[in-house]
Image 1 (tube, helix red, strand yellow):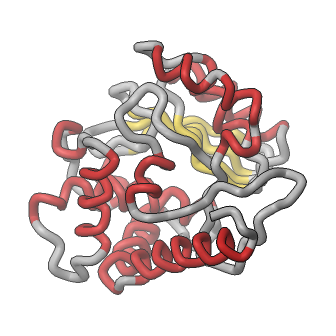
Image 2 (cartoon, rainbow, N blue to C red):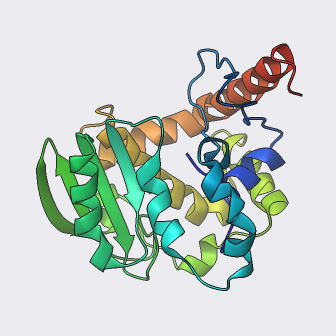
Length: 242
């Protein structure tokens, strides 16, 4: 569940589009059939048209707005498990409680010590863990994932096209991932690990890193992206919206 960039140079939708993905449903009245694929992507403006109308204004502003905060809370899929990032630690507990009230059973609300709305590869990350109605607060460090820290400058993104190139190289290198991409790989592994723990696929963060790494080096992660891309294009064509 995401959109195009509003306060940065590249959002999740921008990256996927640069990889050739198609994910916009035609309308609520004529839903696009999504075949069985490893994952899917919900393009937020298609499901929240009122918010889509203010997208140009958000992009014109040089700072984050309340809509950056609200977006993750209105996922129409209503998942039972989530990893949700906030840029301010003051939002951690309120968000965790909001998820619990919304029916989410397992979640990590995370805030990197640098004000990062992801699990930080540079140092500590504040975590509010929701587990069946119980919320606990703690901090985690890259070493809790079995990884060494990396400065954020080593994982800074670029344009959607540049990010897509990095993404492809990372997922298509197999066991021979370039050393210069090691910080990016570790950053990806940490955040993927949290998702695997929430989903019940991994027993802890280190196990999650191991499983995510196997998916990358075996080519399974890239294959999942290809299935998503190909299925989305095929479904759009069959619905007559491409």
